[in-house]
Every structure is written in C-alpha cells, then in structure tokens.
View 1 (cartoon, helix red, strand yellow):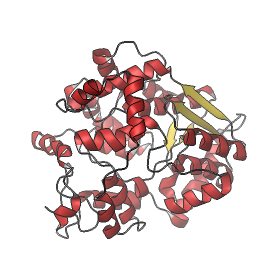
View 2 (view 1 turned 45 degrees about the vertical axis):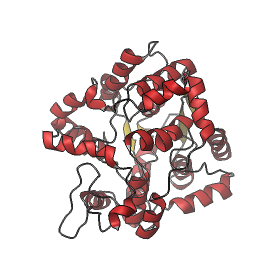
View 3 (view 1 turned 90 degrees about the vertical axis):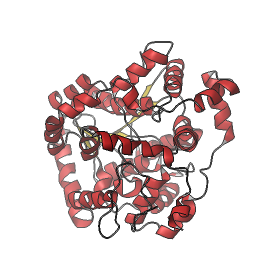
View 4 (view 1 turned 90 degrees about the horizontal axis):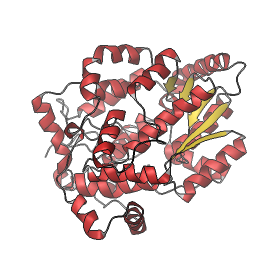
Length: 399
C-alpha cells in the first residue's frame, strides 16, 4: 500500500497519484493554492486592500460585509478579524437547521455580544428539515448533511441581498481543513430537490435551497462575492482556540464540525461506518503540510476510532422516527452516490468554460471549479469508488 511521503493520504484515496518523490497530487495541489493565496506580509496587503474596497462599497449602508457564523472556531475568529483587524462593520449571518448544540448557540451569542455585531438568522421549520435529513439518509448517499450546507450558503446570500452588501466572508482554510478528494462529496440544489421528492413526505418551503438561477443572479447581477480571508493569514487553530476562550469565554466543542448535531452524526457515525470516509485524513494531512501536526502524531491519531456520543444516535432515531430495525436496515442498504440521482453535474461540466471565467473573476472558489466542473472518464469514476475502502487502519499500510 503506497502512502504519501509527506501527508497520510494513501492509494485508497480517490484519484490519487504519486510523483517520483512519493508525494501525492493533493500535496502538490496545496502547493499551488499556497502560491496563489500567500500569507505573511503579502497576504496582509491583499486583505488590507480588500478591506478598503469593501469599506468604499459599503458607504451609506448599515454594514460592510456578511460573515457566516456557526459558533465554531473559524467563523468566530472571522468575526474578530473582520471587525477588530480589518476595521469592517460585519453582519453575522447564521443558518439554523434546529440541530445546533448548546455550545454553538452560546458561542455565537458571546462573540457577537462582546464585539457588538448584529446577527441575522434564518431558521428552517424543524419538521421540514427533519424530513429532508431523513430523505437523504434513506437515499443511502454520503452527503446527508448537504441540505444544511446549501441552506447556509443560500442564507449568506439572502443576508447580503437584504442589506445590499457585495461581500460574504467564509471561514474556510485549506491549510487547516484540507481539500476533500473528488467523489467523497457532492452537492447542488437539484440533488436536494430530487432526493426530497423521491423519499420525502412534504415539500421544501422554508429551506433556502441554492438553485442555480438564484445563485447566478446573486453573483452576476447583484455582484455578490464570497471571500475566504483565512487563506491569507498564518492561521494556527490551536492558538486561535486559546485566544477565543480567553477573549470571549468561547468553548471548544470537541472537533471539526461538531458544533451541530446533524454534522456530528454525519462525520462521526454515518460517513465512517457506512462509507468508510474519515474526514480526519483531510484535516490531519492539511495540518501536517502546514507544520501544525507531525506525520507520526497523525498516524497515531487516525488509528483511533472517531469519538461518538451515543446520546446523539438516540436523538437522531427519535427525531426522525426510526426504530432500531429501520435504522439498521438503512445503514446496511446498498451504498449510493450523487450519480444515482438527478443533479446539476452534467450541466456544470458543459459550462466548465463559464465557471473558469467565474473563478478568474473571483465569483466562485477554485475548489468548485476544479471538482464540480471536471468530466470524469470511466476509469476515473471507478477510482472514485475507493471511498468505500478506507476502514483499513492506515498504520497497517505503513507497516
């Protein structure tokens, strides 16, 4: 079993290749991202110039920029960065799928209160969201938390449109989170609508689905741009968690994306146990590349099972109305992917040239262009099925 000589990705990862030095293409892709998104003085210069432009565009408005918040580490720090470091007037925007943890709610309240930042929240109807989440679970696909991801993205645009803002800050950093391989995840509005129509019991009314037409109108006609400021700073997550705790009495919630219970269930139970997908491969490999974790430490941690609170499993079954037998039958049902349902994927592929222009105009992230618009060959599609082979402990491959 070949393992990357730099990170912990091995030959089971979809679409992986190794160069003559044994370094995987995902490490090389990160190097390209690092050259495109510099940190240090060069990164700060980019952020300062961007902040000046945002301030000019925000004149005569109540706010300058939307900052998406979840109560997590990245988005909480992003609020501080926007207001205290860049001198902007941010509007915090939150999508509530009714499954937030108590810690997440308190974190949002503490940070926004101390920074004196207004909060705009869109709350989906809980029965509707439970039905949608249940539909994705019954569809037997990996992306059961996709409705929340798209609902969050659409809520960002809704907040920006409501207050006439041109910029949205997202708290993602490829240096600490990594880049998930193609084939692990896919999302679009048609995917959500198709699965809900096939498996759901009620129509989508309060979930703000990110339809392509709305998204193009918001980005092209309204000129709303999404920016990831953490790409341009030396971002040490452990130091940031310590800073947030001391400054805002912010609380750590135990792991990446664990501030929400559907995300926690998805990442810590559903993905590893049904699909063999362990997102720690992405996170640990990113931290290795960034010098925030040793390769030895990552190999040791990845060999440990992901932590899981059994009380959350009980809550999932209760709120979704599953008996133990029904839940087990779905967990053991044949695994599906987005290719088994109607999506925008073929349209994205035909419009690859258009999205290249959108990427160059900074209207879509580079990660969207590279993953969503590529047309895969039959051989590459076979490679994507490797997502089902990851339960083998990675240290066995090394030995």
